[in-house]
Image (tube, rainbow over all chains, first blue to last red):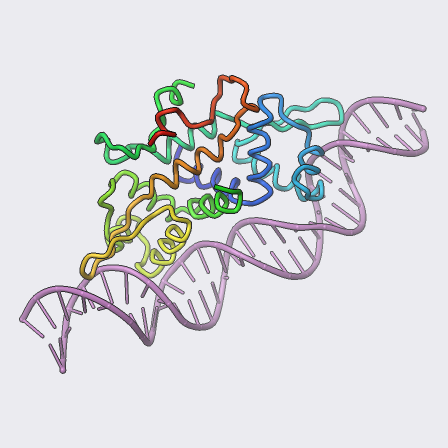
Length: 110
Length: 110
DNA sequence: TCTACAATTCCAGTAATATCGAAATATGAA
DNA sequence: TTCATATTTCGATATTACTGGAATTGTAGA
């Protein structure tokens, strides 16, 4: 993870519809949801959502799986964990501190 | 934390100079750094950085402390932890899952 | 008070992003 | 093949964001 990659991921999430989609996918789990279902749930036209899904995909925050006419989108958990680790990297210069932002041991192992 | 607040925080971080500043402040710890020091480290004019610091401040990601002619900026760790919790909320519908994005027990207690 | 310095605000130009109608692509069913 | 559905691409417009020079505010020291 580097600055540019992190900016791309953060920018992908920094939009109403895209953040809503991402959270729905995190809650939906590994199987994901079809593009049309997401469009209806978020309340935007399918073409507009397609644009946003492309943005999330290019940032590697979501993955796609094709099944017949449907395209299922799912959250990429590894990308989020890497982003969180990057944001909290070397928190407080490595000294022990109460307000830790660094990933927990469990998270790093995931 | 709600969608709009999270979007504002993510948008604040989704910019090269601002992300660089934020990470420097996370590593600097609670004492923070003066605006001028940040401008020099990031390599942008003071007025441009001031604009970016205002954006980070409005998103509550950084706090300010005045001391004489200097203004010290520091990272707001609570805001980041709240954002991370929001992003991983109800991961996989609450079912136990390997790729957890939800905050660790230690993080929630911080 | 006068000067120096830190930081911010103002302003204008430029660039990037969001939106959605219409058209195109692709798969499945009749 | 023909039709219906799912999704994406195209194109044009509107909105928002980034940048940095110049001017301003505020504090400290001579």
